[in-house]
Amino acid sequence: MWFERFVIIVTSLYRDFLPSSWGTYRATKWDYMTYVGTLGLFTALFLLFVRFLPMIPMNEIRMMLPGAKITPKATAKAGD
Image (cartoon, rainbow, N blue to C red; front, side):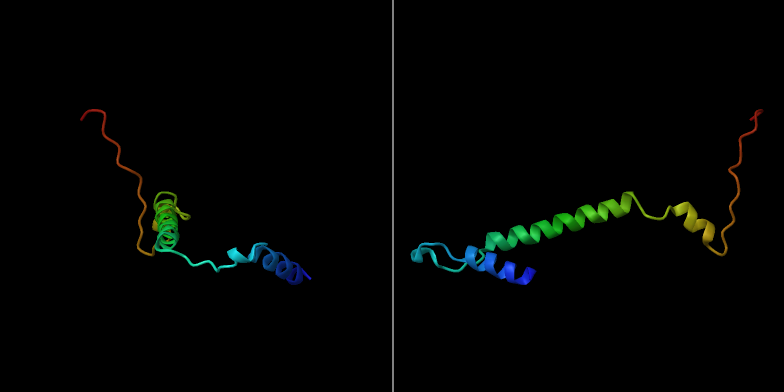
């Protein structure tokens, strides 16, 4: 049912009422460059997000490593 509506809407919007404007759309190099640029921008922002806001904190990963020894930081003596 939704496909029938989709076909009706897309085919009615595909062609204009004027037969002189019944050409098909062809993408230009600027269209392709815009598309590739948006993919690159999304990828860069996603990688920055993963870099600065990781899903698993690094201290939890260190605690799960088999040879990890977690010791408290040494405090400076009052006389030194």
